[in-house]
Length: 124
Length: 254
Figure 1 (cartoon, chains in turn yellow, cyan):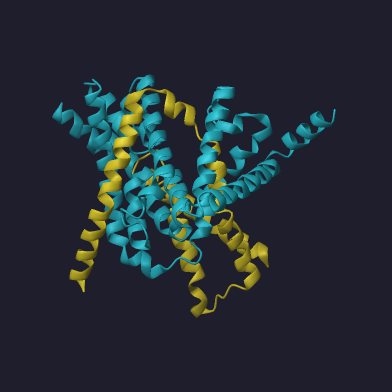
Figure 2 (tube, rainbow over the protein chains, first blue to last red):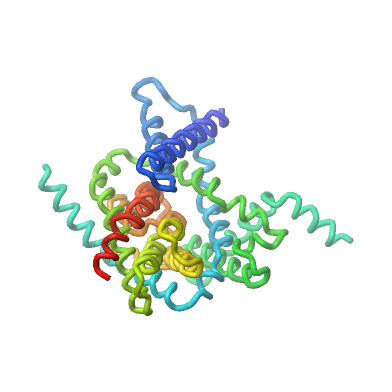
């Protein structure tokens, strides 16, 4: 049933966000630490249990795949509700700081990818 | 009378109106992508850019903070594009992600989150100094804002920064997130962003969940779960490091 998939997804989200809140309180920050990431891991683990007797039926998978497919439209809606005016109108410092951070981070991606691959090869 | 009734119905069913509008917008973007750029520019990238333009127009028209969602007719955008549905859909994309890929980039992915926070903070703080700020609290708050627009105010509040500095840190974070949304598809091939491995590093270094979510959607939707996975740890790590270790570092230097 479709609702099984939706419910499984909801369970993963609530459990993950709950764990992220607890983790945040544990290390003393006012933020959720990786709640969504934990929820994603949980969903991946649960959906990889088919060798251990938990096999999702196609309609159940449909309940999860629907939301996965809604991801891009949701992101479009998210873009349309950003505070773009505030970003553009609060002066050059904000724009310079944000832009410089993005450029520096972009440039570091290939460097880290290369370092990581080399490190991984040494492990083996 | 007909127009009034229609707008009343559309306002009452705001979320459904948003579904319809995003559907039409997606179709228009697909049309533009196919006909004008022959598929060169990803339809999602066009849709996200149109979304940002609408957000600007909405903000200008209403003076509000939620882009087009501040116009009552389009209030449903705030629900559809809000954190709840966004995170729900991000988690759903993990269904079908490969555990092996995650394991392969596990350590470097975690490392990239810490390095990403320190890098963005440092660059943002340097900009604050370049623009004439000289007190450690303001410099750290603006540096934290260059991490994400949540880390900025959390840090500023913890350190007791002035409210205009906190507003500035939010704007720096917003600039970052918007630039990541728009810029990612253009630099993707140059920075090797075409596999799960580099997507996890990308998510960890960029850290802005909305920026990463939209940036990967506009580049290759298959990479979304990997980038989003690491990005969701970023704000937490930023809130941990910025008001503590990183602030102490700034104070020691100044």
